[in-house]
Image (cartoon, rainbow, N blue to C red; front, side, top):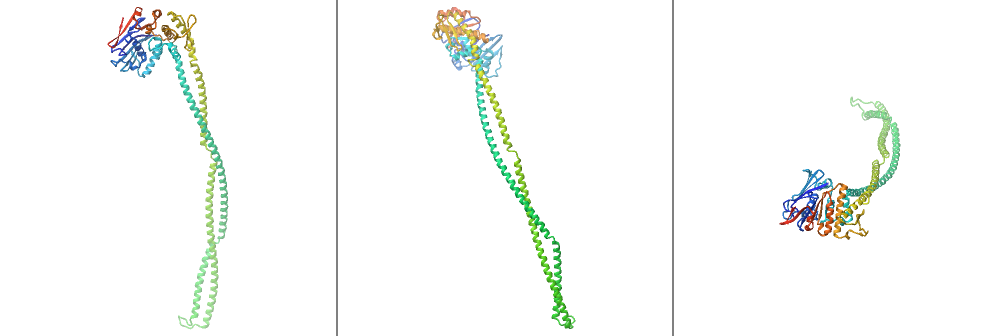
Length: 566
């Protein structure tokens, strides 16, 4: 049980720089009275601001600051939960938010929003909206349950029944479903893109295969053409080699011819010398009658014999020289033939060397073409295609997982939907809710049958089975229904999630809408409440003064709110 003990505040709304303090658990019932504008409802704002960081009134945080002092706004509230004592301090100018547990401050490393979340979820187990529905009734800024729309009614009941977690789960599921939808869409896009890439790659490979086939055909043709060229070159080389052999045979006598040429040249030279000598002798005898040396007379007969002999020798030698010249010419002709044959041999050998070079180049070209033919076609491209197809299969597997996950989310969404598990819980508690509302109405002598359905729409019947709506009743009767619902929410909250608050505040409930009979009916109900510290805020002191054991009077003194306790 949450037992609110004390609330204190200063520089808060119309309150000045001195703390005002109210004990919240001192008496079962306390009357808070004062004129309009005195600051009676400040109590409610101080409590909600302390607990939740915002006022009960629909004003912003900046408007809470006292307009005269304009600084050092501070509120404090003390409460206990079981055997644990808690204290919360909040402030504006300077900003302040502190939580104390058994006198020790709670670590404030977290952000203020997380700090508040910790307070509501771990300590109070109650949020602002639920707190106002089970603690406060009748303030001008407060909207009673029956005046809320169906969605807001659902939120209140879900909080009180502690099934709001299902709405949180539903919202989380919605976010996850949206995220899954986006991921699925991205995956579908990736699959589409990858499929297109694979198609393009396959078309590329087909084109490469066509090119490879054409290239292979061309290469084979070039190989065959080159082989034919090599055969022709081989034939040419063979022909030249035959010619070289024949020419070599034809000049096999070269050495002998060279020797013979030298010998003939020597013979010719010697015979030429001898012939010149003989001619010189003959000319001597022709031109001389006497010996030039001894001056003796050369005999005619001797002279004639000598000249005849010389003429015969000269003729013989001239004839021999002519023969040698003929033979020498023959040898020279043969030498020229041999020289020509040598030149032809050199040309043939050069042609053979050239052709052998061509053959080597052709063979290298054939080897290159064969290597191209034997190379595996586009291994990189084929490997790339295999990788993309594996990636596509992985994507499809993921897509299947997404489909299964989406199916699970759909089932879970149906369970978490308003018509799902929450409705089952609400249906379970609706009879309890309706029973308590009707019992509280009976305690106030208001005899109608009030029923809420699973859509939180009311059905109200009189004893005579006449049908009514909430808005068909008077303000006093509507107040009775509001109070019955307020007390029911308090009971359900205590029963369902152990949220039990000692404090109950009714703000000006008695002032405008209830006559004396209505006041008496409510007091009957209040007097039988147990474990509750009831605060009635009103300006009707004359009607209520004798009905409460404790009274707090609120008044304005020099523009500052003051309180007096009796």
